[in-house]
Structure formats: C-alpha cells, structure tokens
Length: 178
Image (cartoon, rainbow, N blue to C red):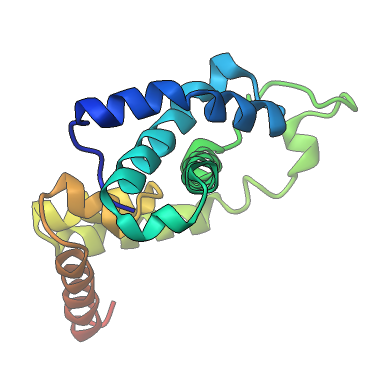
C-alpha cells in the first residue's frame, strides 16, 4: 500500500464525484458513519490516487479498488484496537463478581505465589541491570506489548536493527548464565 501524498486537482474532483462509494461501503458493512468515516476515508483517498496514477488499474472498476483499500483500513483498525495492550482486563481487588465472590475467593492461592513472584522480580531486576538504558527501554516497550516495528519507530531505527539488538541481548545474557 503506497502512502498518501498531496492530491492533484483532478484527483480531488474525482474523489468528490465518487464519495458515495464511502457511504455505500459503510452502509453495506452496517457501520455508523460518525464512528468509521474517518477510518475508511484514508483507504478511499489512497484508492483515488492509485487509480489515477496506475494505468493498469483502469481495467477494474474504481469502486472495487476503493472497496479493497477501505476494507484494508478497517482491518488494520480492528487489529490495532484488539491488540493485547488495548484489551488488558482490570479488576478491583475489593470488588465482587456477578456471583458475589471476591478476588480472594476466586484466586485463593494468589498470596502463596507472592514468594515466587518476588524471586522472579529480583531475577528480572538483576537481568535488567546488565543492560544499557536503551536496551532496558526496549525490553520494557516489548513487555508492554509493542511490536518491533513500533519500537523501531520510537528509536528511529529499522526493525532489523531492533531484532539484532534483542538477539545480541539474549546472547549476552546466555553467556552470563541467565
């Protein structure tokens, strides 16, 4: 998928004339216009540019190209929204479930695991102390559920560079018997 760039006057006119494709798409998918228009419109505008700039696409109907691009944007949105980092469950330790049970009743052994958790935390702190500040930040971001691509963007480097950094960290920690 190519990136959007400034549209030509002809592309703007074409986009305005065929904007009903966006509304048909949203209606067909039974999606509220107010919630999803901003999500799919970028796919639509990308389709306008591709359709205008790539003569090979003229053998297809514009609506087919637009539909595909808008569907791609919608899938990306759903993937983004359903990542673990966005769906983390939260529970109040003092709250009751629908059956009226407390967290201690549901998880009676959770306090027994405290010693194991403490040992794991101490080991993690020891491991992190062997890393540079940048490496610690990368590990924390990865633990928070970010992808290598997202971490690469944060550190202004490539995914290959991030993967190499993690590989070297693992090798160094293996040599130290962690």
